[in-house]
Length: 371
Image (tube, rainbow, N blue to C red):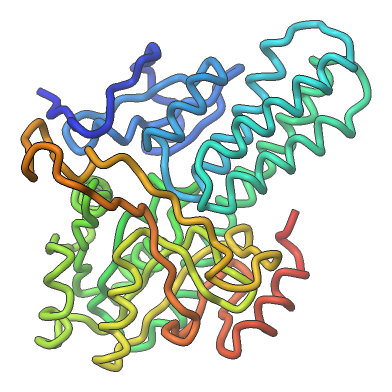
């Protein structure tokens, strides 16, 4: 029986229990006119696939965290633009172009912090606009670009895992935060791609998995993923990370990123900043993993990153039970920003970026992989 998550409303759109046959544990897949996602609100109790057959469904899935993780959100948003164009039917090009602008604005702003969503939507919008012909032709152009984004992210994950494995050295006990794996990307993940690579190479003893409050993406999602993959792990409450470091249980911290500013300041799931401070205190490497698509050279530093604030009820209760007094005042930022000076290195699909990060990011962002 599925345990309801009280703070995230259930899907109001029809779900499709059919999993994409070739890759049943894939966060996002394209299936004949619509994206099909794993509804992550239902995990770990039930594996449910939801066919996002309308733009309303795409936006709802992104906003309610049915699909989450910066790369996966970008992929879903890209496919959502295609779905919106297909829904127009055989309309004139001028009408399709007007509607395309509306689609891009609506989908691209569904969540503000992760840069991948806006970037992916902009890419498919440009591709559709550059395609001659009416709405169906524009949709075909957008779909080709969306598939390219998906393929690129899959390849990026593989590259991040490979580069990260080389960066670990003798580190065999890792600590991670939130979910950065197959549920969050188009491939094996970002930080979890490093974990999977280390496990496959026989160079991993254990992963400590932060619960990641208040929605428990670590406890619900990362633990679910790692269990399915046979990766040794233990879940701990976020506040236990410092004690784990004191006791020598952590050789390196590996986390993902939702947006990286030009100077290396990094937005990631709330709680990441605290881990970075603890890692610095205990002289433990703090590695941030992500594709170049998560880097935003147009934002000078962390002060320019918009931090999404979510509903108070996500903190006031969980699993149908109240965890605070009724109506307790709440501040619920979904992300925090880790200053660049606390980061040991970035593990990207283009390789390892080391301090000083400003010049390193500028060079990497100007190379292949940006689009």
